Amino acid sequence: MQRRIVAVCIAFAFAAVVTLTKQHTQSTNVLKRDNYEHANYGNFKGFFNYALNISNRLASLNVKNFAECSLECIINAACYSFNIAIWSLKNSNSFACHLLASDKYNHSSKFVPSQEFHHYAFVSPCESSPCKNNGRCVSLYKENSYVCLCGDGFSGIYCEIDHWKQMTTSPVCFGASADSFGRFVAPIAGDLLTFKLIYQNGSVECAAGSSSHWGCTYPEMAQDHRLGTIITNSQSVRLLPKDYYFLKGVPCRSHFYGLPGQTVDSPELLFDNFSTPLNVSLGEEFQIWFTEDLYKCGYADNGLGKTCVLVFGLFV
Ligand SMILES: *[C@@H]1O[C@H](CO)[C@@H](O)[C@H](O)[C@H]1NC(C)=O
Ligand SMILES: *[C@@H]1O[C@H](CO)[C@@H](O)[C@H](O)[C@H]1NC(C)=O
Ligand SMILES: *[C@@H]1O[C@H](CO)[C@@H](O)[C@H](O)[C@H]1NC(C)=O
Ligand SMILES: *[C@@H]1O[C@H](CO)[C@@H](O)[C@H](O)[C@H]1NC(C)=O
Ligand SMILES: *[C@@H]1O[C@H](CO)[C@@H](O)[C@H](O)[C@H]1NC(C)=O
Image 1: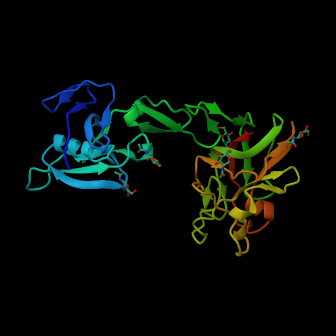
Image 2: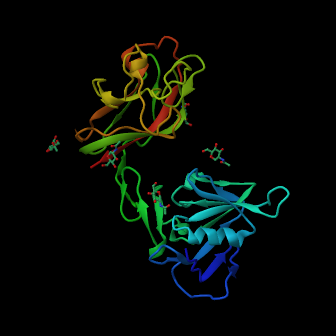
Image 3: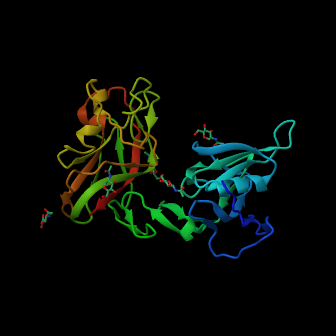
């Protein structure tokens, strides 16, 4: 394989630019790879004492210096960033160099302070955080552009359009026993796709010492079916979650459910969608229940604590 590197520029966080090769080509793009995916040049930005902690490494190399690691990245068609060790390996002059198939914008939660590594990524328009409402920024390096991947209920080029409507102006609280459900009424009419509850304060207790925002942390409970917060209509008939998400077969515990990506202490509880949107009228009442209180099952040892939330509805 012919290596066709023309120039590598390294823009450090403190703005010094280092040109590594003899020939320097001017370009507005930060990365150019030819038809055979050989990189011609790439501009890197350094993030000192940070690492992108993702498991899908393209390669783990030992290199003499930073320049060698950056060259290895630009000649590897799948490489978009790398971590390089701050300190050389014991009894040698080489440094660990991890080539990565993605970048920190695509995996922002995995970008972490590090005592061992510096992180380098191709200069990206995602650096200015153009995606709103926790949208994920995916760099299109060759086009010097990006796209925003929006979370549920957000849309628009920058995820700037918010389809969530706040349904409560002050917190609503619900407890785990003695019919201590919370209620709220729809401030608008419309077709509702789902609800989400934003945690404010407090907790519910499903057994002595087992407190959480939304469910039950009792050790014998199934790990993936511990949520117990339920939305009902004004007749206390469950609306969400749907049957599908509940545990089957075990008395009382069958009233707990699991939702992908949600835990008993998530900062917000995003429910599943109605199969067909619910036609809600202005002033229609809804209730929030703890499952053992609603179904009167296994509630004798429940504490008196309450969880307080703000309610949002996703209208279509
Ligand atoms: C990196 O990720 C692994 C597994 O996801 C985790 O165990 C480890 O603590 C992380 N390291 C840092 C420095 O965050
Ligand atoms: C970003 O992540 C998605 C999947 O989560 C992946 O398909 C895509 O290739 C990644 N893009 C970059 C530039 O890392
Ligand atoms: C619920 O509907 C929204 C909007 O159509 C969609 O983005 C989301 O993926 C759906 N959620 C689930 C769990 O299907
Ligand atoms: C939540 O906070 C409010 C105001 O700070 C307080 O009045 C209320 O008692 C708290 N509720 C719980 C359940 O902790
Ligand atoms: C929802 O209900 C309102 C009045 O209650 C009615 O005018 C509207 O057509 C209904 N929408 C759907 C999609 O059923």
